[in-house]
Length: 200
Image (cartoon, rainbow, N blue to C red):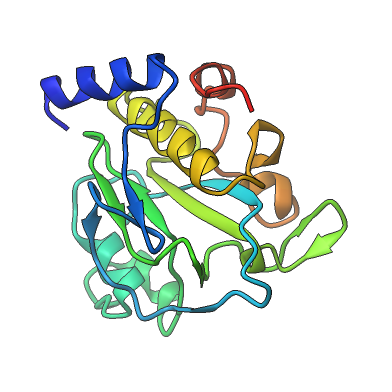
């Protein structure tokens, strides 16, 4: 994200409006990479936002492997750590790169495969009703200012488009799968993020 774009997003969010345009579940301003790993939502419901992190290989940024994973074309011979991902069919709705770039893989109206075995408020299978946002990062490396800026702007937009979303229905992957997952990790500043959201 350029400096001017970053300022524009910050100003737009500060005014209480939404900086992105959404049509049929797609954010116009995002770079689109169409993942085949999705299906229809059972009830068409969007009522939860899940924040994740991802890096491939772990701790390495700016590489194409996340796209490859979500497209189902990751060459698992390229790094020994990829061997555990062989045959994995996974996707998220969004990825926010370290420079703030927004990438979208699946329409918000469809069910991406990001949460796995999960539960929120006694409901299983969070993928059925959740949006998944991946931050390029790790549990213990600080996220960038650009990432927070894009995440806040995107979250405000999604809450405006999908009225069942609100600040109380935003969680980390660790919250819905605590025995399996730790992301977005201790490096994620929840107070900073939530302070940047428009009150619901």
